Length: 280
Length: 191
Image (cartoon, rainbow over all chains, first blue to last red; front, side, top):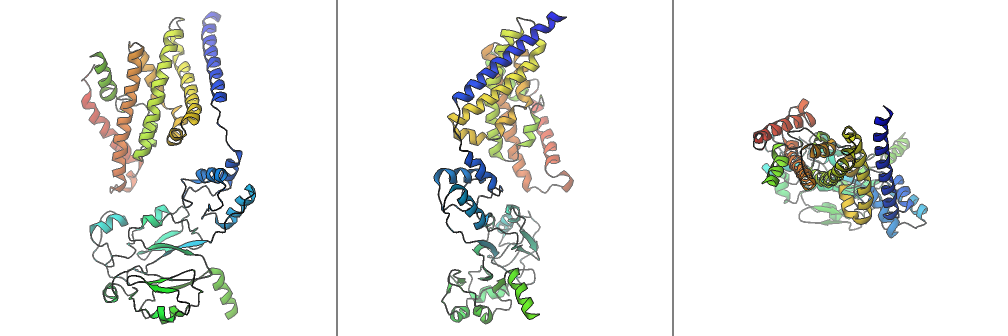
């Protein structure tokens, strides 16, 4: 009995010992020096691997930051607080990041833009735009099937009445959703208390655009003349606001003649609360 | 001729996934995307070939002379687990690119039953050393074939209109069963 047990025990034990010696030797011989800082930085990052920094994942960002000490690296989901915290950890003066949010450059809800036909194919914006112009007559509009929603790691996007709606509180401005849109109606603009932007993406001439959508920019240039700072320009039949020059006076919003005003003035929730208080 | 038989048998007739039902976990788990499926396939190939070569030497060198063949399962698990460790350490130093592309799959292979299964099978059939290495290498090729075919189908399934209760894994199992039946057409080709 004892002898039949000894052999397996010894053989297994010796093989295990030999292997452990080999692993020990190899791990010493092939040891890779790793900066413990990388792990610390990685733990501080949001860990959503959104790729907004331009690097493949948070770990890559941590490695890059520790290795190159590049002060221009930014983490849009983490915001300026995180970046400055990272900077102080590494003893670096990080570049200022201006927070941005994502906005939808389309107001083509079901009753605003005319539909083409009922679409019953694959429920995906890219597939829908390939069949014909898409479910809506405007070829520049938000297709409204929500292909971008899956790209948002923060749950900030939802479909509402045929267009995408972005929750400002949840949006971190990472920009991961932008390449997911076939008609390019998503854009990043600086996060301000008062955001003014043209919520239209149509490059069609005014007469054409007006036929299919009552919220389309008709390129009348009224806003352009109303702006004291020359912050608005025309680009191929579409008004464009230079966000850096805009001071949020909202004069352009008043003059816009389009039925469903295509210039949107959006106030941050904090600002709205303040105004409510003032008004009583 | 003998070699050709081994190759055809390992890749098609006795395919690890479709005929022996080994390694179903990674087969279902990492076949969502073609890229990761290929990555997993190569990691498996690497460890499977090396693992059964060493297992063969241990089996013929220690287990058979001392008549303790019943120890093979424990012994092979030990070998495979340490081998994965070694490969990971070496790869991290030698080829950072390959290490990064295999990523999480490498440690996962430790518990991949296809590796142990092939190591045992390679010893059961009366192969010499060269043949057993060949057998395990082409078994791994069979695994790659299976997982890549399946990943390609699953990518198409993503856009298919599948009834809600069957979405994702259930429909994958149905597809895997049909694929497996297709591969049964090869049975009887090689003994």
